[in-house]
Image (tube, rainbow, N blue to C red; front, side):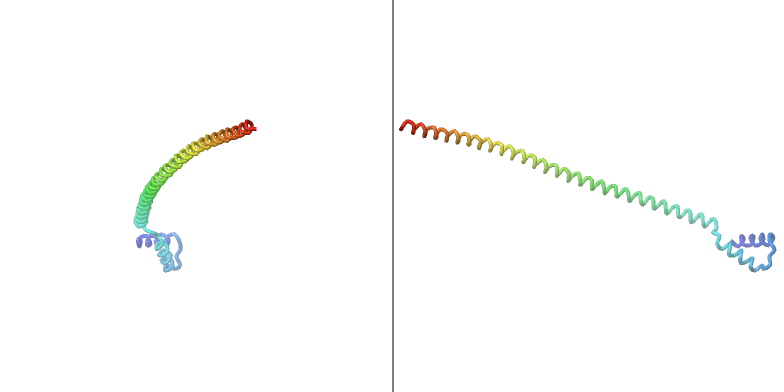
Length: 135
């Protein structure tokens, strides 16, 4: 860095008329103090690239773990869906069983009602015939 400062100072002295050598030296010092050496810049850039690469790999691993968790949750939901399907099937079976049972009971009541109507009709007919023959 000092070599660069000396070189700049010499070149500026040759190119311009210098009234105050101390001022020129301070200018060159300020200018060279803010310059980053190439090796330092390349080293920092390489470190930054390595950190970014590490961060990207960490993110990829994190996304893989999240994907695995989602797959596990999907499997749980599939298992729950199967349980609900089984419960639905049981309810459908119960519905069909109850429906058939009500149909059977309805047939029995219809038969009972028919026999009762027929029986009452016979009783009424016998009563009318009995009154007709007795009189």
